Amino acid sequence: ELKVEQNPLFLSMQEGKNYTIYCNYSTTSDRLYWYRQDPGKSLESLFVLLSNGAVKQEGRLMASLDTKARLSTLHITAAVHDLSATYFCAVARSGGGADGLTFGKGTHLIIQP
Amino acid sequence: KAGVTQTPRYLIKTRGQQVTLSCSPISGHRSVSWYQQTPGQGLQFLFEYFSETQRNKGNFPGRFSGRQFSNSRSEMNVSTLELGDSALYLCASSWRGGREGNYNEQFFGPGTRLTVL
View 1 (tube, each protein chain N blue to C red):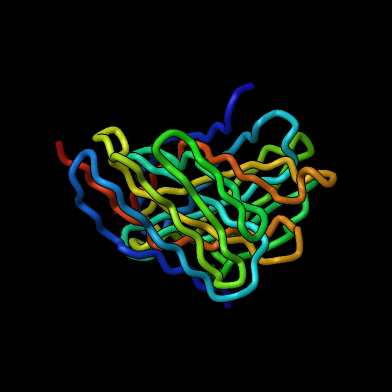
View 2 (cartoon, chains in turn green, brown):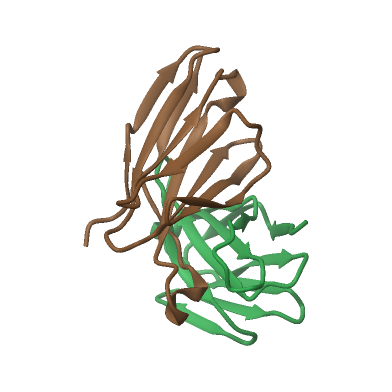
């Protein structure tokens, strides 16, 4: 059974600081996704990581994937209040098929001025 | 291009009733997946449909069912509602075709918030 663990589950940080959210998964996967969810809203796709060593950046967010360690990180640089949200990682089983995604429990991020 | 749409957005039902939720995928997308989101269990995969066939199913009881129509629109049905079925139900669509579609990026709709009293 594929399991996905995120940590921390809750993070309060100040504007301007850097921090990293970690996502570990239990079995082989060739696709990892990061999503953002604002309160009462749906999921917004942030990154799709497809291969070992993949790194993607968008603004103050950067995601990376290490398939050997079964680890992905989402790094926040010089945080701003607008990045306050819940961040989920999700993993698909290997094989290229459209399997359902297994989600982590989410990291609730609060960025304070 | 219009996004994924879900109807209704909010629904209140009582225990024992049944409910049908609808999802219209992004134009051209052929795969529709359903997820349940609750504070306790988080996001859980319900099932996935592709070309009117259920391809994958999560670990939910048989009270949860779905179908997909020839235009890729999908419905999910929950019968004999229980209090624990109160949740946000999210639908996601993806292209799932050819080599570029192999990674199956899923785009989520706004969700239907179901409250069971």
